Image 1 (cartoon, rainbow, N blue to C red):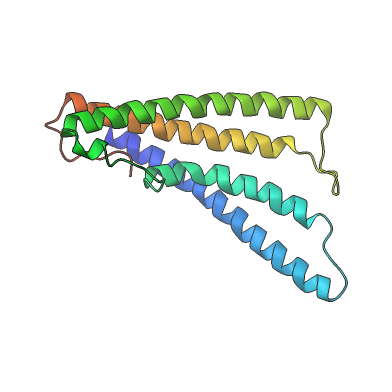
Image 2 (tube, rainbow, N blue to C red):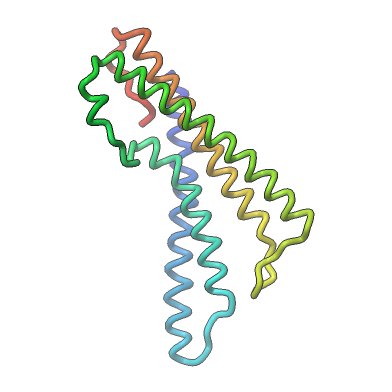
Length: 170
């Protein structure tokens, strides 16, 4: 299980690298647009590109944030449970979240296919939108993989409490 968790963590880091590149692209484009507006030469479509890069940033950073357990969790009640029950609650929670993001991924793929078939493009630049929706689907798929692996890891702790050294995906 540790080998799988390490591989999933590496893949999540790769996705996070893409998200980082999207943020850098957003910053550079915004700064250039502001500077060029001062010279009366704005970059056309900046708003569109920043919005699409924002979608890439958010969806591709989800998996690494989950690996790092960086999401907000309200667990003041669960902390009072015995350890095995805490692990079971975490296993159920991550399993449900994995199923949810699997469905979201599937719906994004369906939507992206519809956008591609209809030839939907952005307003200003006339750039196809479907690749970005496929990117959102990929980010959701990666998050689902992380959550499935994490859920299995929590359930291993429930049914094999002797294994103290394994922590969910890091």
